[in-house]
Length: 119
Length: 108
Image (cartoon, rainbow over all chains, first blue to last red):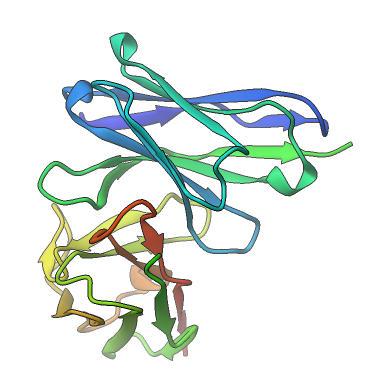
């Protein structure tokens, strides 16, 4: 089965660091891009950035660049989203998703990782 | 950045009726347009790509049309499981990949 599976929910304090993960399976993950999408409480989908597992080519949303770091370990088919200093406004559901080969739509989605930042 | 605008924000429809959702791009995206469905507490699911091609396993009651800047998602006969939020997304020019704000389809 083709799937991407994300790490579990996190509760953090402002100023703490965090790294969440997204692991692909059932497909040749080095041939695909994995993107990250934020959904703040009660809001819509916001694209954050994307990484190509084959060579770690990474692109960021201009509005979020510098606020997060996207990385990957192709040997284990896993992409990461990282914060060095969380803020309360980072509280959201974060989805990873695979970009299709024939089109640039997200065809396989992870289950989401809920990040709660609260003092 | 290409801005995607969806309308209406909320659509009230009775089961069995037809639903028509709109998505407009701030500049031409050709047919590089996808539609997603998101139910409460779930991840989004790809419905349509290439503006009109159904993704694997998507029922035929879902259809997409349009090109350039104007797109439509039609659900021919709403089933109970179709009440959800629908998003369009362009992938003509990225980064960034951009989503519309969503249309909530609710029971009338």
